[in-house]
Structure formats: C-alpha cells, structure tokens
Amino acid sequence: MVPVSFSLDDKHDSMIISGANAGGKTVVLKTAGLLSLMALSGLPVPARRAQVPFFTSVLADIGDHQSLAANLSTFTSHVANISRMIEVCRAPALVLLDEVGTGTDPEEGSALGVAVVDHFRKVCGANVMATTHYSGLKVYAANEEAVLNASVEFDEKTLRPTYRLLVGVAGSSSGLEIARRFGISDEIIGAAAANVNDSLLQATEYLRRIKRESEQAATLRQALEEERAAVAEKFASLEKEADKKEAQRQTSFQAALEKIVRDFERRSQELLATIQDRSERLKLERETQRRVAELKREAQRAASTSRGREPSAAPTSTSSRPVRVVREGQVVTGSRATRTSLKVSAQDLSEPEHAQYVAAPARNIAVGDHVRLSSFGSVGIVDSVKGDEAEVRVKSLRFREKLENLELVEEITPVKRQSGRFAKLRPTSYTAQLSTSDENIRSELNVIGQRADEAVDAVDKFLDAASLGGLSQLRIVHGHGTGALRRAIAELLKDHPHVARFAAAPQDQGGSGATVVELRQ
Image 1 (tube, one colour):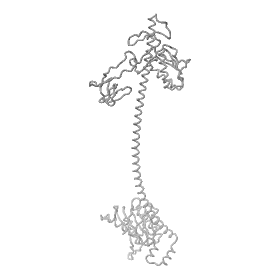
Image 2 (cartoon, helix red, strand yellow):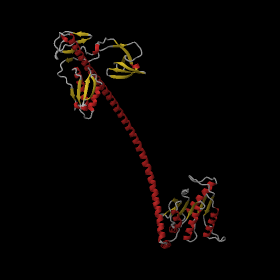
Image 3 (tube, rainbow, N blue to C red):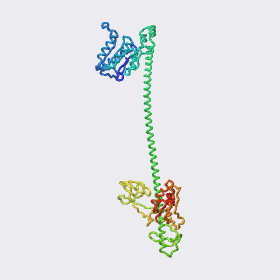
Image 4 (cartoon, rainbow, N blue to C red):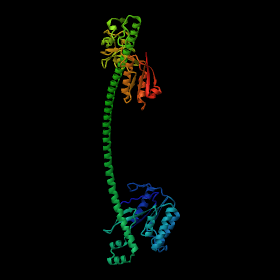
C-alpha cells in the first residue's frame, strides 16, 4: 500500500497527472473521488489528515464506455460523458477526467483535452484532476500558474512503477519500457524506438532529467533543513553564552564604577577639607594683619595726642616720635612708651586655652549650643537646626547630623580671653614690630607677568604694608593683557578692610592698565 498526498487550494485549483502506464494515475483519481464522497457522507476517511470542501457535485469520466448497441466508440463514449458533466456541473465541484482527449488523433485529442480542463476550471469553477499522456496537457500545466504538474514514479532500473505521486514534475509515458516488460521482443522494441522522432526522444529525456533533478533537490532540501536546525540550535547556545558573558561584564563594570565613584568622593572630601582649612588660615592671617594695621594707626594717633599734650617732650622726628600705648583700657607709660618701636607680645595675641566640656542638662538643642558628635567624639557649635537634623561646625569643617546623635555639653574650664579689640586674634605665637620709619614703604606695586593668585597675594601684602605705613593712596600696575589680573585684583579690593575706594588710573598714569586705590584712614 502506497499512500497518496496532495493539496488543491485557491492558489492551485487543478492537477494534470502524467507518467507510465500501469503506474497508478487512475488510482489517484479514484482515491480522491471516493474519499471526498466518504467525507460528505459522514464516513471516517482513511487518511492521517484530510480537509474536504462541501462539494455540490463530484463528476467523473473514468474507464472505457464503448458500446456497439449504443453506437459508441472509445472516443465518442468519453465525449458524451464529458458533455453531460458540463451540463450538470455546479460549483463547488470536483471533476475527475481519466485520459482526457484519448481515442482520436493525438494532436486534436490534446487540444480538446486542454479546452475541456480549462472550461471546467474557469467557467464552472471546479477543482479538476486529469490524467494524460499528451505533451500538450503537460505544457498547459507548466504554463498555467494555478495548474499543478504531477507524475507517478517509474523505476528505470527495475522497469517497474513505484506508485508514488510526485507533485510538481511531469512524467514520461515510458511506453517502450512497459512493452518490453510485458514480453514484446527486443527486435520489435528496437524498431519502434527507431521510428520515434527526435523531438519526442528529446522531450522524454528532458522529463527524465527533470525528474532526477527534482529528486536531488528534495534530498538537498532535506539535508539543508537538518543543517539549518543544527545551526539554529548552535546559534541559540552561542547567544545564551554571549548573554551570560555580557551580564558578567556589566556586573564587573558596575562594581568598578562604584569603586571609582567612592574613591572620587573620598578624594573630593579630602580636597574640600584642605581647601576649607587653607581658606580659614588665609582669613585668619588677613584678620591678624588688619588688626596689626589698626594697632599701628592707634599707636600713631596716641603719639600725635602725646605730642599735643606734652610740649616738654623731645623734638619730633621721623625716627623717635613718642607713642602712647593703650592696653586693656590703661595707658602704658615709661621707657616702653618712648621707644622707636612698639612690640605686641605673643601673650596678647595667643590662642585661648583649650576648653573642657561636660554633659549639660537635657533640653532642646538650639543654634549656638555646644554639642558633642557621638560618631566622632568632637565638640562643635550648632549653626542651624532643620527638623530632626542639625548643621554642626567643628573648627573649619561642617557636619549634618541627626539630633539623636548629638549630646548637649557646656564648658567647665574658664577660657582665657583678651578684652578689647584684639580678643579675636588667635596666632599661636606672633610678634608685631611696628616701625615709624617710612623709608621702606612704597606707594606703587607692579604685578605684570604674575599669575592671578600670586598677584592677589602680593597686592594683599602690599595693602597691609601701606596701611601700616600710613599711606593714603596707592597705584597697582597690572597691565592690559586678557584682563584676568585686573578682575582678580578688583575682586580682592572690593571687600578688603583697608580699601576705601578704587578706580582705574587716569590716562597719564596708565589708564585701564593700572588701578588707583584710596586707603581707609
């Protein structure tokens, strides 16, 4: 038993079956018609899978109906039957034609067969299955897109049919081989072969070659399908491995990035602390110099007052003017007040003694309270309180801490503090030598060619020295250039304690390449 499988649908509504005699062409027609009638009758269909339309009519012209009584030959019996089928055909229909156009001249029979099949397809709208040995019907199937060529397989080595249906390939009739198989002598077969014209031989050989190529294509298609499945499986495995490696790379990259960010934040905090310490130190040095300048001016005013009230004092000179020093509200007299210089000891400007703290009575923490940070153990001052957090200043550093991590403390060790206007100065050791000589004091400073930070530092010292020397007006030469020096110096002068006002120099004194400064008196 050899199963038959085929499909007719909207794209391919008809099939022309060719091939060797006794190869199973008529069996295919009878199988299609019988199984369709079984399905329409509600009987189980002997097929692995079947889909049958609700045909209105199933029409067949199979077998030879010749009759002497009815005056019917082979050809006329076929024509009469087909004529009746055309009359009763109603779509959807299944039309089965066995050896359509046979029994007459091959050329005319082939043309009639093509016309009949085409009429059932296009006019009646039927699914048509026809068997033939005519080349005209094979060519018709090859040229019509909606018509399939099919053939029954014939084993040329054993000269026996296999009864397999090959869809898509036309077959040769192999009439001479079939005749040899059924006992016709080789002499007769040879004579017949000699009478076959060249075009028929070429067509037969062409059909055989098409059949071989079709078999090779089917084998190759199967091999390619198996290879495709293997490649797809391998690709899926590689893709899974690549996803795994990518996930590992992402994890490593994230870890490295987090480490770099932590190192950057740590270094930034260290650098910020360094900058804050340096800024605090510069502010302290500047405040010290300003206080010393004020001390100098106070000493000069005291000297002037002394000269006005003590006419018997020594003659006024630039090297030995009497100076009255006021310390803690008392006038210091004696030889120390008449020297040519005034010394401020380290004791006057020393840093307050280190304070000690103990826990204070419990109450709400407020701005200005001393608190101890439980995380560091350091004592700082509360600058602000927001919600359940407070900002605490410990020397030059600021911390934001939860109130629950702060302990309220109070100072128990008396802190030695200086009264008067020098109480805020905190150098650990400092001696100011205030000379009344003006021989080293300059009224002009040239910073052309210096970097901005170097120039600002030089101008700051220059202002302190000029204020100590009692000068009232200065000139700072910074040049034109890109204007960076001029802007940096202007930023310093804007908030400097010694400066009363400043402006660009007149054109005859340098114009915008210099700045004239007026000091406070």
